[in-house]
Length: 344
Image 1 (spheres, rainbow, N blue to C red):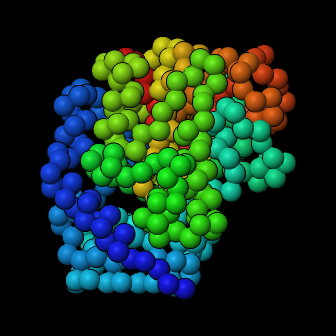
Image 2: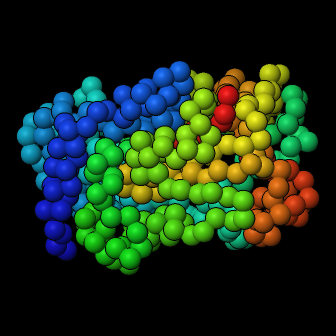
Image 3: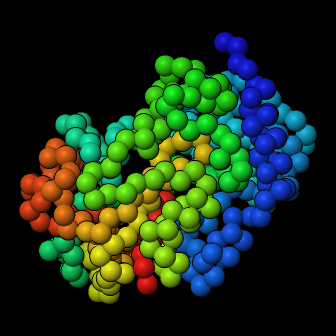
């Protein structure tokens, strides 16, 4: 099978040029939010420093695919193809000589989008099922059975100039697939198209939604809705490579965060970091310490939705919790790569 590599090189050159021309996103963050610490979910998503790279490697396709190497000492690697486990793989360089490998490819519609009905398969197989619970159970001593596993979605943010100049719409899907050398009709193409269409669909009543394709655009959207006096939090697993949580207990120290409005940003499946952010005024957030029987500790973030009347009646949460829309607050924990913005 023949692949066109020129678009990938052109794309990487744009990244290099923009990285030189623009301030790093950390600087932008500090200029807008000087007193707000950056959570781990954000620092893990910053694009690497391309200036330090010594070469370029491009891997496009399924299996062994096509490999092109330039220079010595490693460098930027882009893999847009199936690989093992499916999905879109992108590695945008490395720090300290270690390459970053990214694997993106969920089986199901996002359980954190209110409009989708869950399938029977998702109800039994999606590990996010365990993340849903009722607010009345949010107290120390509650026993849970959770799986906080390290995400395989390590896609990093593009520089804002590159993100803004890169097509991201369903009517330009063909050119997007060409840019990333993804075959139309493939699993990778389906994943990318699904992410774009989720971003384009209208939100439910009372929801303001936006897909951020750069850190700067996430900052701008969130502060436009909440102001600049905010805190930004994410779930953090304590020092374990695997955050597998079985027989987990809510520990003392549950703390409500902010008021009743928030911007919650969920990382999507795409070759570079895209966050589906939505703002509602019927949302409460909590910091929830968790402890498992095997000693793993998690500083989890939980979000509770006090008005679910507009959600799809067949949403995953209702099927798991056996409740109906609009009856009781529905809560869920957030994976490590999701972010909550809250007014202080």
